[in-house]
Length: 370
Ligand SMILES: [Zn+2]
Ligand SMILES: [Zn+2]
Image 1 (cartoon, rainbow, N blue to C red):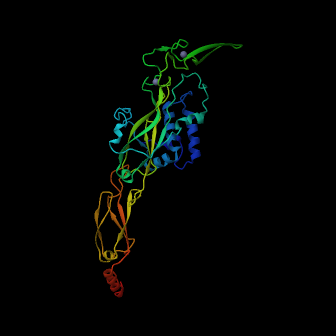
Image 2 (image 1 turned 90 degrees about the horizontal axis):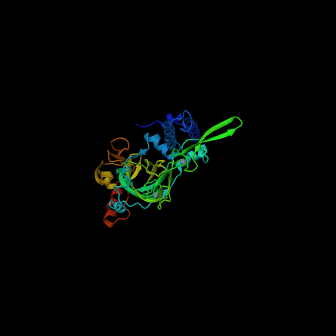
Image 3 (image 1 turned 120 degrees about the horizontal axis):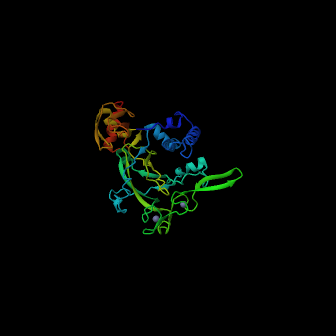
C-alpha cells in the first residue's frame, strides 16, 4: 500500500534536499501531462512524493513509519454534514485554543518550478487550479498523544461557495454556452503568412476556455465559486503519536478554482510535556523517591502509571538510580499492536525535616555505622 517515494523520484535514501528538488524537477518535466508523452498519473505520483520528501518533517516521518498519516475519507466526503454548525464541537470538551493557521503555499510549487506564465500553456483547455494545502499546528495533552484522541478544530479556509455550489452563477440565473467557441473553450484562428495560411488553435478569450458564460455572477462569491469560510474538521489522532509528527487529511485543504480539486490539510501535532511522565520513543520514564529505610529493608510502593497506580516491589538493599521495568505500561506503537514499557528509576530522598524521635533513631543508626 505504501509507495516508495524515493524510487518514484529515482533517488536513494541519503539524498540531500538539493538532490530531492533536482530529481523532482527532472521527473515532473518528464511526466508533465501538457507534454507529448506526458503521463498524468505518474506526474501526480511525482508530486505526491515531493510533497513528502521535499518537506523535512514529513520526510522524517515517512522514513520512520513508511507513511504519513493519511486520513483520507474521514468525514471528508460528508463535507461538514455531520458537524452541523459549530455547536457540536463543545461536546467532547475539546475546544482547541492553541492553534495557528499557517496557510503554506505548497500548492503553488508548480508555479515556482515551471514558471507557468499567464496563458502560455498552449492550446489545452484551461484547467482548474488546485486548492492550496493548509498546515495547522494542533496542541494536545501528553495523555491524549499516548492513547489517541478525536479533536474537532475550526479553521478559516477557502471552501466551495454554498450559494452557487461552486459554479459561480447566481442561483436561478442562466449559464450560457459561449457563442465564440460554441462551448469547446478553444477557437481556431487562421493566419496568413508568406508561407501560406497557418491554422492555430488557441484558448477562447471570451470565456477563458471555460466554454460557458455566466449571465449573473453569484452574489456570495462574485463568480469565483469559492469563498473564505469557517469550517470544522474532525481529526482522529492515533494513539502513540509523537510531538512534531504530521497527519495528512487528503482534500481537506482549500477548495480549488473551477473544479481544480481541493488541497490537502496537514495537522502538525504538538504534544505538551507532563510533570510526572517523560517519554522516550515508546518508553515512559518516571523518577520515584524512596525513603532510606524502605530502600534498605525492602517493601512495596505504589507508583503512578498512565493506567493508574500499580504496586511495585522494592527489594531490600535497593540503591539510588536503580531501575525497575513495568512491562506494557508505556506508549502504544503507532504502526503495530502492543505497547512499550514504563521504567521507574528510584532515588533515595533524605527527609527534609526530622522530629526529635526520628533524629534520635537516626543517630542510633549512625552509631551502628548505617
Ligand atoms: Zn457562489
Ligand atoms: Zn468561449
